[in-house]
Length: 129
View 1 (cartoon, helix red, strand yellow):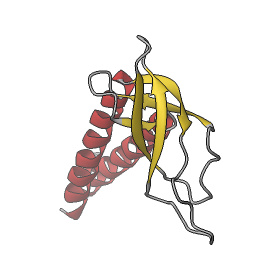
View 2 (tube, rainbow, N blue to C red):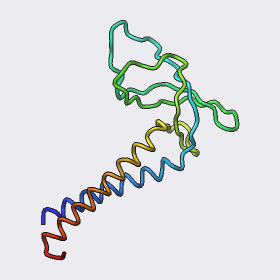
View 3 (cartoon, rainbow, N blue to C red):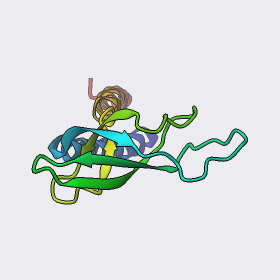
View 4 (cartoon, rainbow, N blue to C red):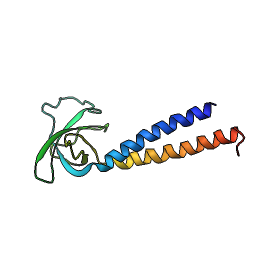
């Protein structure tokens, strides 16, 4: 019975990851520039999880300033550094790293494989095979 609960949990996480992947695939890919931090500290600080100010242009030429979440454990990019992003077509201030799509696709594939393994184990323990 524990296996079926595990399968349900994996299926729920897989469904949420698939929905997020589907959403991100509809977003528009473009290049953005890092605007820099106003007052960088004199000592080493981790900016992991902090919002990075970026600037990019929409196809119609409109410039958009947005905040991109920093998942890197390293230093900040240099001011003016170019980065690949995806933005929501109806709300361009919503941005995400372009690399999020292939990483999320990998997570979906791994979760699907785990779900298949769990379901096989449940099936064999129930004597259905």
